[in-house]
Image 1 (cartoon, rainbow, N blue to C red):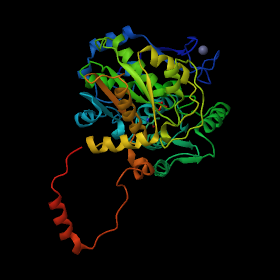
Image 2 (image 1 turned 180 degrees about the horizontal axis):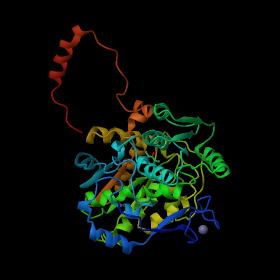
Image 3 (image 1 turned 45 degrees about the vertical axis):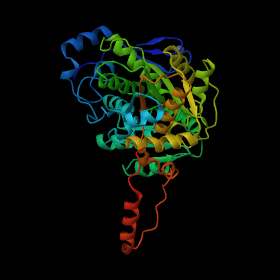
Length: 421
Ligand SMILES: *Cc1c(COP(=O)(O)O)cnc(C)c1O
Ligand SMILES: [Zn+2]
């Protein structure tokens, strides 16, 4: 296993550099998040010695650019979700070169969170921890419970009031502790931050966050590689706490640093639900601070009203030519149905949000018909049954008597073949 080129952590805002991660895992001067810094020359050397073709096809493929120690890794089945050409959906949206990065089938828990949680729990194991906590809008909890079960450590998952019931139920199956508090995600996060710092218990997305966040870069690495190292013109990413979108920007940048890509600049765009769009609004307003909100959307997994890195994210998105779209819930549901009907991909509302945002950016001219576009579809709808029930035709009809089958067949034959959408 290659060793990491990690050299330090740096503040996203004031650029202070830390050789060791501070106890609170944020900048001691300005309390902003810290980001891993690597020495890219040594990565270039490692890539010459061991080119991509000789490496395992999983999350740890470019472990030189992840903050992990050499040695055994957890979750070798995680990573390399499909990148699929979406011709039928593209025709509906007026896009000739549309692709879906399909993390609805990522192992082990069917959302992009398996990328970040794998790196956080790897770090927890390396530092001898036998228990972890997390605070979750839904999918982090699933992922922590699944991976903690796999590696045999204790875990406690904190959920807010508003969370998809199917995510709580499926998390429970893994036999880890679940605590649901009567507050918004931001309120529960504040409680957990205090507990994490008072007790020193590692929370994957609080005091392990600089490790956790780096796992999200692998989504960008994979997209570039799956397109033969030609990054797309646009990448549309659903945004909650901004980890994924910030690390997609960083991931594409790093591939240029280590000369795996040809420098085609990717414009990375933020997709949010209108009912929780602080980052999208900051991007569109040209602001470097967000205005927090209380979420009101069916897209629970991306309902974070006060993301602490929101302002920095808005700045970074604009710096790569990105913009944003905030889409209403009705369009999110329509986009979920369209994605399922045209591509056979069942995505939760976060995925509907990025598809609807891509449609909006096409409609307003940000994206042109011939541009190459990758839409990140980040979670599986089997965990959001309420949202699925909102789709047209979702009601389960009463069972017919068997004797009526002949009549049903006759009517079906009489209808002819339905046009494909
Ligand atoms: C968490 C999540 C996101 C984005 O989250 P960030 O906090 O911005 O990284 C997107 N889609 C799904 C399905 C998620 O669970
Ligand atoms: Zn700082």
